[in-house]
Image 1 (cartoon, one colour):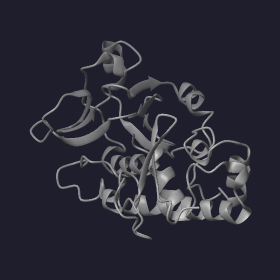
Image 2 (tube, one colour; image 1 turned 90 degrees about the vertical axis):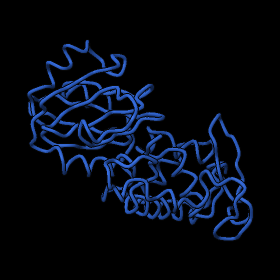
Image 3 (tube, rainbow, N blue to C red; image 1 turned 120 degrees about the horizontal axis):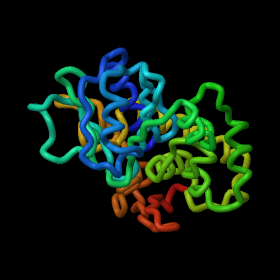
Length: 269
């Protein structure tokens, strides 16, 4: 599932291409992807223009000049593609939004959604999300207070969207490896120095992932050399059985609460 770095990469690319541009056509192929009848969705969206593109956690908010908001959550398997009717992927898109000759294709939204909301509705949907980990005002002290409210496993707190917005399976495992701490540690067993390391690793891993475009497999547009670049930089996630890049011990692939979890018992405490 796309996490903060993937969605922020999309946001930046979308902001460059969409801000101030009018929506010339809309097509809905799967009505379950949206929240109102397709005809009404197309009527409300077509003809207005994009005001700005924002991100909150794993969501993207397309703010429209009509005052409405398109709220996107890709969930598992969703991704975006930007091209023309001639330059498109050989697969069905659940929704397409045209901006002149270019088209924004919403693919893989079997579990994800693109909902048309008022600004108040959008704010209410996102109100319970935790703070943004890369917010300049987010401090190590705030991070410590948040995770200390939890008594269970560290990974459970890191992927809880009410604790932190935007962290999922991949980056929870990556930041724990960076900090040298097992993701299945019980939170009460963490020492103050380890909590500080976790905060530093949270910042370092997310910034590194952003710099390399996250781990999405499909480029955002033809010739895109950024999106998905972090695939080569993951140190433990999806690398079960491979040698740890820090200590060469085999990386463990485990299952916790129906989630995959990857870690190194050689150098994570």
